Amino acid sequence: MIKTINESEFIDSLLKDDYPSWSYDGACALFEYLTDLEEDTGEQIEFDRIALRCDFSEYDNLEDILSQYDGIDTLEDLQDNTTVIEVEHCNQRPTGYIIQNF
Image (cartoon, rainbow, N blue to C red; front, side, top):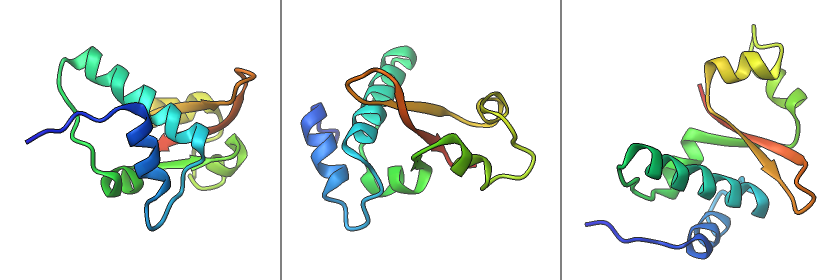
């Protein structure tokens, strides 16, 4: 059984998690990425906030990510190894990154 949720429900659920690790802008960016992925693949994604928390991490800056992974020295290296989602605020400039953990 699949229930369709809208952006507001998605964001509220992520931010109300027992162990929230998302900014509001990060939750928005993840929602946009997942809805685009659904459109591109033609498959629905089941919403599971715990799985999302385990599969993705949000970072304030690229340096924080690079310090976590040996052999990853640039944004391009990171993009070659995993999904990278830029988190933007209303100024349309990156304010952080969400990556799929690897």
